Amino acid sequence: MKRKRKDVGNEMKIGFVIVCVLVIAIGGIMSCSTVPAGHKGVLTTFGKVHGDVEPEGLVIKAPWTRVHDVSIQQVTVTSKTGCYSSDQQQLEVSYAVLYRIPETKVVSIFREYPGDPFAVLIKPRIEECLKQVMSTMRAEDSITKRGHVKDETLLKLNAVLGDLITINDLSITNIDLSSELEKAIERKQVAEQQALAMNYELQRAKKAAEIKIVDATAEAEAITIRGEALNKSPSVVMLNAIEKWNGIAPATLVVGSDTGISLIPNGHAADK
Image (cartoon, rainbow, N blue to C red; front, side):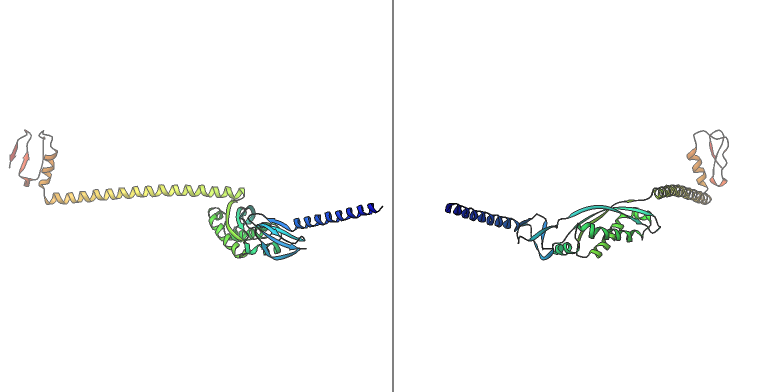
């Protein structure tokens, strides 16, 4: 009987040791955690957020403390939103934003903006800034000035977010117009191209006319100069006739009497 009591006592001791070992093991496991690469760890105790952040790697903590992983890597998110232009045209703007959470703002973001930072913090502000910018532009201009839309939106977004979020880039990937507006813009562009073609032809015709006027003026001036030269030197007429003569005596050649030379039908030249 005594041996049985002793055995029971031993078994209880063994059981107690086993329980202690298990408690210690479980406590040890619960006291260790890891923060993955590119993340920071935020500690909470019964919902209360600690002020410090833990670096990536192994974290030793109290068993009742939790470690929440917050990414500080760059994230790229695409989305789209509806806007109205200054001429009251409905547009759909697609965009891509590249952002990251600064290390110094990990605790603030976790405490004040729970959930996905893009959904709860960035997206509403991007869309508000986009709507403000698009409301100052005509729908047609927003298509050709997409770079301006990006720059102005990014400027406003950085002013709103401050140092909470680092926006590395914002791209306007597409601006969709209504089918009616697209057709209207296409018709306008066709008309503008036709007008440019007509203007080109008009300028070409005008230039050709100017060239003709210049040529005619030059020819008239040449005739005038030539006439004045003939009046000053009548012998030039005879010189021109001799230069153009084909070797056959003409039937009649009348020249001024002051040249001193005449051609007769038999081909002999005689002095007056």
